[in-house]
Image: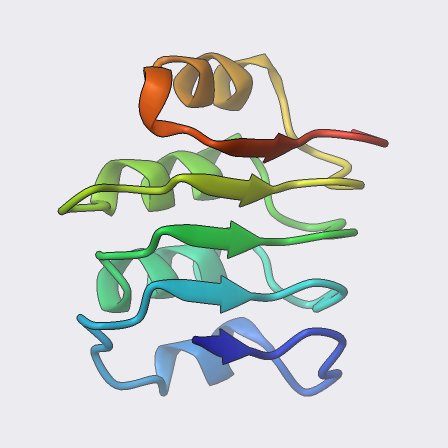
Length: 112
């Protein structure tokens, strides 16, 4: 588990410095306002076995970044998604998430 919630210095560049984390299952990026699509691309490349991802109150990431993370997952896949307050979350991402079917245990889309 890696909790970087509300860490101001978390930027796309910082996420690109993460090593590959194949065993990482829980990533919390709540309140990391600088994380954009490039940051999510870095997460997708380095963290492919996530079961839980939280991006509460993200104002920069778009459907493009969310889609990359969702496509990159291997293994059991994401079971918990917290996208509350993500200002640029669109219908494409919601449809992709809905397609995950019964594997999805928790989804928070409040304030989107």
